[in-house]
Amino acid sequence: MTETKIIHTDQRYINGLLQNDSSLVREIYQRFAGKVKAHIMQNSGSENDAADIFQEALIDIFQQAEHKGLKLTCPFEPFLLLVCKRKWLNELKKRGRREVTKDPEDLYAAGEDAFALAEQMQLQNDKAKLFVAMFQKLGEKCREIISKCLGNKPQEEVAEELGLTYAYLRKKKSECTAELVKLIQTNQGI
Amino acid sequence: MKEFDHDMIDRYLEGEMNEAERMAFEAQMQEDPDLKNTVELYRDVNQTLKTKLHPGEKESALRNTVSEMRGDFFSEETIEDRPTVKVVRFNRSRWIAAVAAVFIGVVMFVWAPWKTQDLYQQYADIQMPTFVERGTPTNVLLSRATAAFNDKKFAEAIPDFEELLKNDPKNSFVQLYYAIALLESGKTDRSRQQLTELYNGTSLFKYDAAYYMAMSYLKEKNNSASKDWLNKIPADAGLYEKAQGLLKKL
Image (tube, rainbow over the protein chains, first blue to last red):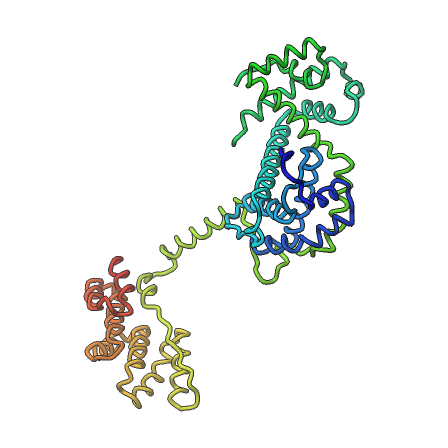
């Protein structure tokens, strides 16, 4: 998606997350935690809420980089602020609050890329949430089979563990996944 | 929504098809965008759930690092600890409770079952403004009368009002509250005498006097006389809104 764009030097923060580089993680906290804290506390959150949002945002960014190949084409700060802002808006909605959140001032200078990347993260997060919610609706047996089949063990071992033949496990797994996909398709856009 | 052979999709994604099968299936996907989208969704579901159900060591390691540093940059203060602005988190059931409480409050206020003379008590209730200016004997009397009046000890206030009026018979402020105290103590005739005098004068309290004349009739449930007096209050008087509100209810 971003092959043609120039990767920003702030990609080093993302690499820091990918490599669990504690000095870079500390630098992220040092440079950006204050702004996120200020934004959330100005919008009816506590410092504890701010810490939760900041932490979750870093993990989301890690996941996006690890599994979806996120590459930073803008500075890290506006991107992180946008991700946190959206997460906080979601949380406020969940709590049944309707405040209009004030934009962090630093966002006025945020480029198109920052918005696009944050938007994409949000879409991925929403999708993942839907998938997990629908997965929870499956019967216990289906959940067990899907979960074990998606793990790192060879499927033959999983079959043995569950006391099933390999062929039967494959059949059940495919049935359960079909059920899950159907649930997702009917609940998309709700 | 079309139904597709989920075994085929599964085998394709697991790489279990032989070369011929795979090519045939891919050709089918080229022709049928719905099949292609469904296969993509299967792939996406598998990938996403894999990362959600089995986060992996790298992610847990990062989670540890991130949460270890948290305390260096954020305090553990929660919203409940904030001393200045206390924000109560309202979930749905709290909202329902809050709305119900307000509703009951409004019903009780309007219905007011404990009030026997509800309209009178609702509309005649008044507090005397306090003027803080110490030292003179007049002010000692006035503040004592005011305190008694505002405590609804009207009988106690009356002698002080009379004393004040002896020294200053044209003090319309004292006259008005004296009249109200008389009314509240059941001395309706003397009250009306005071009020009529005030009303016929040109003082600032002319229409307050008319209003309390209306109150005196309201107290006796003489609604038509009460209305007559309320109607004397012009639109530019301070009590006009209140008078009109009461008129609607009578």
